[in-house]
Length: 375
Image 1: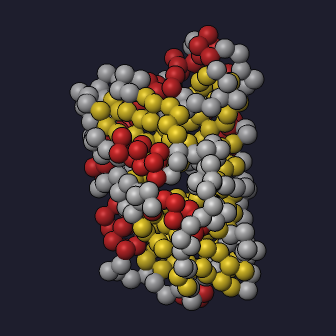
Image 2: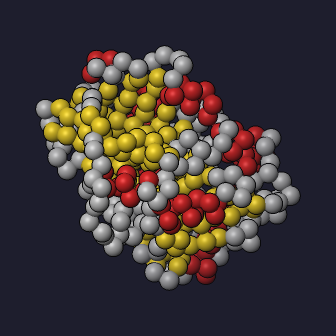
């Protein structure tokens, strides 16, 4: 591994941080082997690559799994007294890295750090017999980071330091395709700070905003703004608590995660009924929506292609915007702590995020909070 020299000037670009999409998401966890097995058996991911003592990595073990364009990495520390172990001790299992694919990792690092991003990883090049990758990174909210990965000169299974993870266990895919968006929970009065960060440091746009009147119930409220990069491939909604009668879901997350972090990852599918059916059959638990939600659904959202009964049976929500409609459903937290969860989403033209479902969704979350004694 060698540190790269940073050119003094790069050619000016209209989009100074062109992103090709989300390359992978890395979790720091207490037991990477077991976590990887869960995401295979429950979500239908396939074994991809492994790094650890057997590949020359002495301080940690990492397992990468993949389903279509979705790649997740689970990393655990092999000893105490290091950043990985400390992260798990403080937060429990959670997202550490949102890795974004770029054509030029050096340029991505230079453009963001000169605009005020705090350096996490100066550009480094790693090589093996399959070529080379270039990695760099910056700090985000809490202890979360963005890595920028340049892999155009690499043909290996994942990246140097990893070997192909060969196993007889290869579960059936559930139809998950790619990361649609990734949602952050930040502390009180911090949303505008991170909106400004994504605007000025990374060149994103604020494409949607929701205040406490849009996202509220009788008991709790939150505010949210959606940030998108230039080509729309990468979208990051940012949530902040708002005053309410009781504790909001964002406050509950911040309390149990001990800080800011990734609240949920939305994963796209082309057939949400088939995907959710498979996930439920694999043991994934979803929030329950009252059947009354569906009584006037078609009058609210108009005609849809899907039969209503399967949606009602599975608890899938529907919302429409000017571009079309979307179908979405949310898992319960996948940890014992009420922190990380997942969204399954199918877009039928819609570019929005289900504003019409907020009330039903957050009331469902509040029922779970109340059962935990945290509302």
